Length: 189
Image (tube, rainbow, N blue to C red; front, side, top):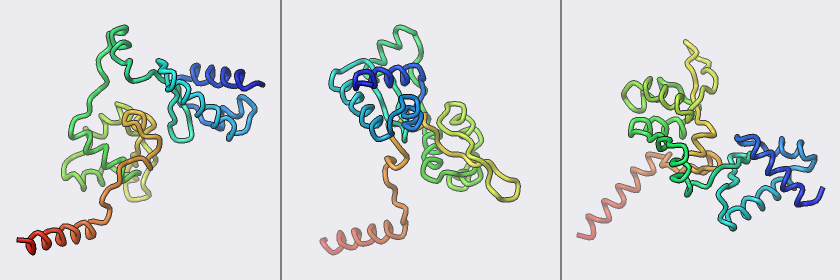
C-alpha cells in the first residue's frame, strides 16, 4: 500500500467512525504497525492544520478522531440552527474539577470537599457526557466511583489527563511559601 493509499484509508476510517479510534484498531484495519500508523496520522493532522482545512484530526489519549475545526463552529451552527454548546455553571465546574483531579471519586467524597450535596451536579455532568461511572468502591454500601470521559478531554482541549494544570497538592508546602513571602514583605518595610 502506498503512503497516499494509507492516508486515504485512515481518513476514511476516522471519517466513518465519527468517534475516537485507537491506534491499535487503525493498525489492525490497515495491517500496519502502530508506530507507522501514528506517524502517518500525525503527519495528516499537521497537513490539515497547515492547509487550514475545515476538518482536523485530534488526538485523545491513544486514539485519534476527525472533527470540524472549532473556528468554523458559527457557520455550522447557522446551518443546523443549533444552540451553542452547553455552558458549565460554577457549581458544575467545581464538581468537574474535583472529579478530574481526584478520580475515581464518590459523590460522598465530592460532598466532603465541597461541603454541599453533589447529586445534582454529578447527575448533570453524567447527562452532559463529561463524567461516567467507573465502578464501585469496595466499602460499605458500595458507592459508585466517577471519572471523566473523553468528551471532557475534547471539551477542554486536553490530549490526556496529564495535560491538566498542576495543582498545589502539598498544602503544607504552599503554607510555608506563603509565610516566607509574608515574612519577606514585613522585613522590607
